[in-house]
Length: 233
Image 1 (cartoon, rainbow, N blue to C red):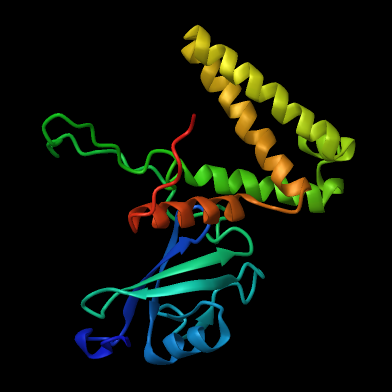
Image 2 (cartoon, rainbow, N blue to C red):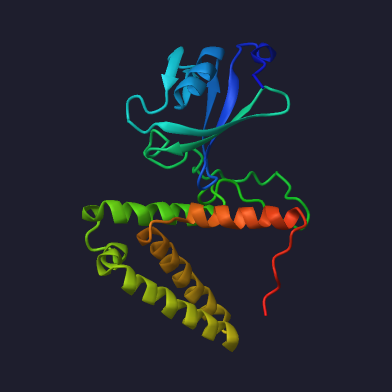
């Protein structure tokens, strides 16, 4: 499917860029036909800059390129969703996303009944996307320990697989204890410790959160097709 550039007076199609790992919305840019085809051909996001009036490859100055993971054209062929892997901060201010400035609500704007409206508060990424951010940070600590030599994660990697596996076992036991005791606050904390140490274990073992999620996704698709897994004892 191609884009319908003729729909737009300036023949520029808006493109929303989303972090493929975390789901966070990073920025908005515009494709003309040349930028669209260049992006597909090179696998790096290239826009048409309205201020510079020329093609502009994101990261051409900073080195913070956006590597294309997938491109999705909407049903009207006049908007694109770009799922990308950022090589650094996307915004020119050095922030992850261009959409992290909080906008105060106007008092005259009525909130929907039974709901609270929050505009721009916090990070514009799905909460679950933080797991992907954490996994990426853990892998960076593994690859570049000299960046943060005193960090807990670096020291954990230095202790090796056996100690990391032991920590996962300890945190799993403590999680079960708090769950059985009905300690809701303690359970959240122990579960957080368990998930973190499990991510470290995956990385030290040569695996990752992505590989684990791929297995879960495959199992989910299998169940959706009518093939049930055996029930637990």
